[in-house]
Image (cartoon, rainbow, N blue to C red):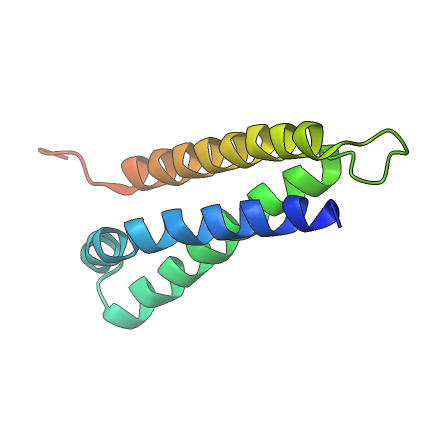
Amino acid sequence: MLIAYEILVPLLAGLAVSLYLRDVLGRLLADLCGTAERSDFWVRVSTVLMTAFPVLLALWFGHSAARDADAAGVLRTTLIMTTAGIVVGVAVMGWSIARSIPKAGK
């Protein structure tokens, strides 16, 4: 049952962040990519990554299968890995987009 924490918490958090960023990311990428279809593709890719990366970290570093696992410890580790996954995901995405923005005068 504890593995449900390690799957649902990061999944829901990643989806929430993706939904929060979806509109602004779509507009920004439409400007950078040139078409709505290209932008939509990259928004979907970012949604998958922002959802999957926290789940991956929570499952990889989680310890729900340990004999001495307790709900509080599993939830704490899951929240730490979820937060780390989202922060790293947003940072990498922001850095990648920032590098793609044309510099003025070039």
